[in-house]
Image (cartoon, rainbow, N blue to C red; front, side, top):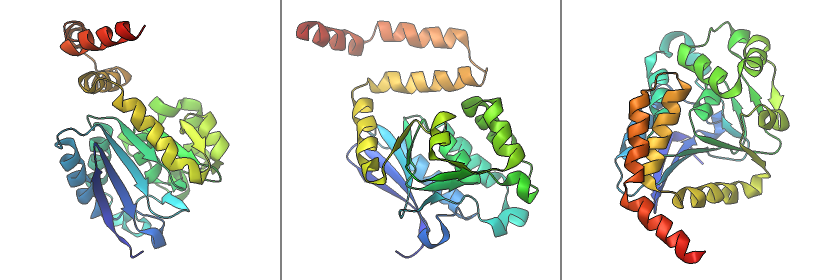
Length: 244
């Protein structure tokens, strides 16, 4: 496969964003940041979409992160803004890590709601090894999602960790054999399809705000009370009652 910019594909109610620089371990080039942001906006505006899957091409590496040769001169806000936009994507996001993950791609994965990895993969955050102090939002995501102890180990030692530790520290929600990755993603998608779309949007937004300690308690209660009055709740409860 020829190396190309990230691609977006729609299939039924799911969008899949794929990194496609296989010979370069699916690195993220500076110009890819704008491409990915445009893909995210297209997906967010798609009627009837239920979820976004982020994955990589090939069978070895999900992504090696931002292009090393561009860090000194081109690591600007484009990369951070792209990751922030992925983190704030309004629908559930699944990162299907088809292989190992390095550098800024570890943060890209943390921007997703769910992360499914494959046996034999590894994780490396080399920022301190190359003399780079990580950007604020990335540190926030690490500490919020993985906790302070794990974040210290990953950032302050630059040690690689392997699949089982990725699962243990909460970087991965599930660890599967490579051949089982598509089926694992499908299980999550089927569960998402079984949930009320409007509630998923408000719940995700509220969870993100609470995690960032920036929430409005009145807004959270308004979402709760609106769901109590909704036709969706009434119809779903009626269907469950009829089956019981």
